[in-house]
Length: 178
Image (cartoon, rainbow, N blue to C red):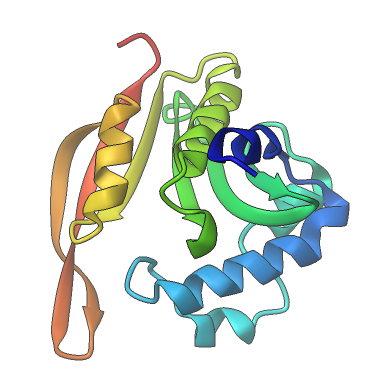
């Protein structure tokens, strides 16, 4: 199958209650494959009864949700969105848990997954800003975010500590109308 045909078979949608097991599987896989890219570890997550998006997925929450990319029914990528709920902060939300399985990376699936998640987020009334954080060593992801219109607004030095090594986090923002 050609790359174009393969990409045409990818389906993107919000995860729903029946997708919980697929979410758990891919979330744990991303932590194993990219242990330095996320703020939590596989060992921490495997012990939990519930993962971060379980309630949002089960309730099919309108403002905070997880998008998935699917190939032949298999969840191959995820991108989460969490809207702030404070009266003074609900104009913004955060992209989190962005991941595409290794065998599907480099094909534009991550970019499309993020774009569809952003589109669904910006359809919400009053949402003006989407923020994300990315470890500075993840140059491939940073390029994708920049192509999608994200701009750096800050840096958190020594954000993660991996034994004796620190990783910095680049903070990025996308405005609805810019």
